[in-house]
Amino acid sequence: MKALGLIKPNLVAWIEKERPIAGPYDAIIRPIAIAPCSSDVHTAFEGGAEKPSGFVLGHEAVGEVVEVGELVNEFKVGDKVVVPAGTPNWRARGIQEHNFKHAGGPFSGLELSGSRDGVFAELFMVNDADNNLALMPEDISIEDALMTVDMVTTGFSGAELADIKFGDTVCVIGIGPVGLMAVAGAKLRGAARIFAVGTRPDCVTLAKEYGATDIISYKDGNIAKQVLELTSGRGTDATIIAGGNAETFALAVAMTRFGGGNIANINYFTGSDYLPIPTLAFGRGMAGKTIKGDLCEGGRVRIERLLNMIRYGRIQPGKMVTHKFYGFDKLEEAFYLMRDKPKDLIKTVVYIDWNKEK
Ligand code: NAD
Ligand code: ZN
Image: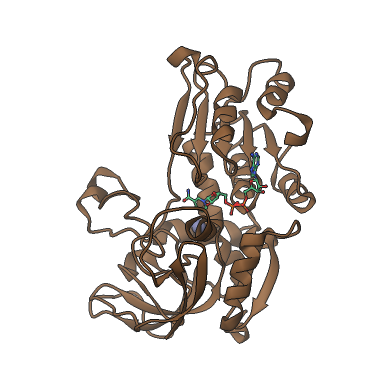
């Protein structure tokens, strides 16, 4: 079968792969729609995690079940399904310690394009199908559903990690699709004031629509200073990092309040071996600020819950899809466009079987 794979660092191209094999709990899926992710771009072009030659990228898909293992009970051939980016092995020992993302070792919950071939293929395998697939609802658009599998769950994971409470002052740094969903998540968790750091006009418009009360631009100077000034020196209750580099990490620590402030990272850092913590802003180690960083929440129930939020009008993530392609052979172009990121691009979707778009 045909797939879009990483030949070597900085080279992604079409390759021939063997058809994937389903174990007893697994399912084989034919993609109906795929979205390339910024993380695929980091992995391929920015010195991200090392992968073997011929490794298939991609972890955002809606598809159709074409085969199920003998122990899969709840899905059958022909079912349309939403596939979470995070597909934990729910039988791993660490699950009993509530370790859903790294239960079998670092990043083990991210199998697709993490530890094995991803969804940029004519067929792909989903482990533990009963616990990792969600039925594609008929009353929800493919675009909305596809955004839940990574963008919504990751942005919302940022809001959860940041432990946002009613009335909080929050800053979201980076308002690509993940940051935009962090803004939406912060609003839904009851934040009062939400600073969004970004400049691209389309992202700024959506950030306001999703709940940002203040827009901050790095073009106006140090963003931590700006946030501190706007909060009379107090800083934020919670800061979510959804874009930027190591320096951004230091700025996030600096803008977050002493005594209980939370810094939540969902960004994928490349290009530096260490993340800096500013000594003074971290109270010489005694500031009472908490720093957390994690992968998105995966699995079936998470996606079913997010789909329900779309159904009842709480979120409209499909609005982030700015560029659409039609046909599996357009995947390469869509992926490279995601890398080159023109100013008006937030998220691309490739419809492989667009008759099934509805
Ligand atoms: P994106 O590239 O579309 O958005 C990032 C935004 O950050 C861009 O708008 C960019 O202009 C902005 N930015 C860059 N440098 C900045 C700086 N110094 N200060 C402020 N803003 C800055 O990416 P995305 O798809 O929104 O994803 C965001 C990050 O989340 C990526 O690193 C991605 O790999 C990562 N990610 C993590 C998970 C996870 O499970 N934790 C899942 C998906 C994506
Ligand atoms: Zn991703």
